[in-house]
Image 1: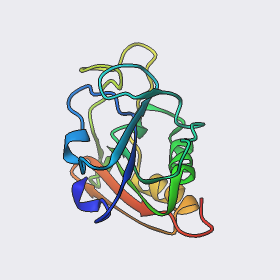
Image 2: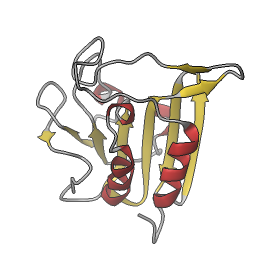
Image 3: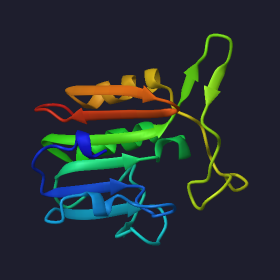
Length: 165
């Protein structure tokens, strides 16, 4: 995550900030304003809200969306909201579970809960996101973007440009 942050930033909005198995707040510039948004209250959460429709009072320099997209069928709306909440030139840093085509079979990250440690609860959504699907969605809202698959992790970073989002 850190290698894709801009050199200078003053404000960070984290989507899905509930600290289930470790947070990232301590890895960020301590001088930056940090706001964590999640659908449920708990450690690491400053604002309880649905990020698909959330609008922060001020546009921010960085939106972090780490290990969230696989937990909702509405992940494209989260990408769109990230763009809406970023300043021009602002950066989205994103990670999620993905699948890898091994030729004879698909390899996917194991299902896990977005609400607690362990397996998903009954009725809880879980679906790995493909690099192709993520790239297509990010491309709709960001001027410059890149993604990479590392193991079963999909990592992406994007910059919001003038007239985009």
